Length: 235
Ligand SMILES: Nc1ncnc2c1ncn2[C@@H]1O[C@H](COP(=O)(O)OP(=O)(O)OP(=O)(O)O)[C@@H](O)[C@H]1O
Image (cartoon, rainbow, N blue to C red; front, top):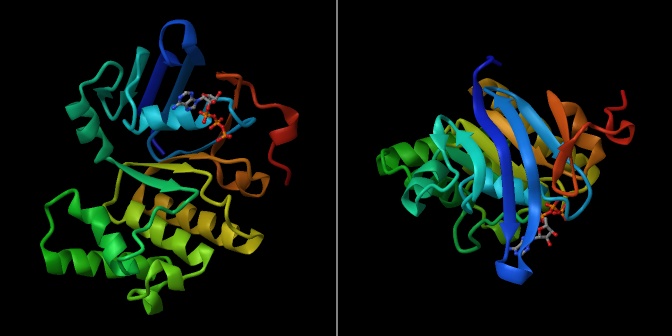
């Protein structure tokens, strides 16, 4: 971990809708996340966690305040800049979003295709290597329908990390998994992230995985607040 922030947010506000229907969902968010840090964001349903994650990932555009990711200001950024910014991130979601018509290997290769810098054999090699690292070397030619929930999520992790992104954004990656699979998945994410030196921001309601965090932040009613006792890591 270094003391260089890769994500720096100041006085960020976000609204959905316009006119009378406008609703503010994020209020005066201030946050710095440092290179190599694993940060878990928790808090009640509807408090704004996913909204903040999507703004950070350049998946929607931030309206007011400042949101600097890897030195690039995303607030009021053009669609083109947001598309560029997305390329620096890996994404892991609750619903793994794998393509059902592609094998595990082809799904992971897609994580490299957007970069357009690797030859086909190189993509094959890197994707196979990544699947080996998540323990799926025997299943590289399986289709998602033939994999368990935990295995699918491991493919999604391999796809997110294969391009060695500087930032990984994960939204409820264990929500659909049983206890053991959930634990395996976050342990793999943790180990690979530490190996690659990437920064992870992970949104979860799953208290069982809080111990992988270097830091836990808490969102309530659109505001980041001090972590209440109830979500403190119990060890
Ligand atoms: N596209 C949208 N249009 C309008 N309102 C939205 C939109 N997306 C989210 N909201 C609202 O913004 C608020 C924050 O939602 P968000 O999904 O960020 O919360 P969350 O903390 O991630 O919730 P959960 O833990 O249930 O996933 C909620 O009131 C939600 O209804």
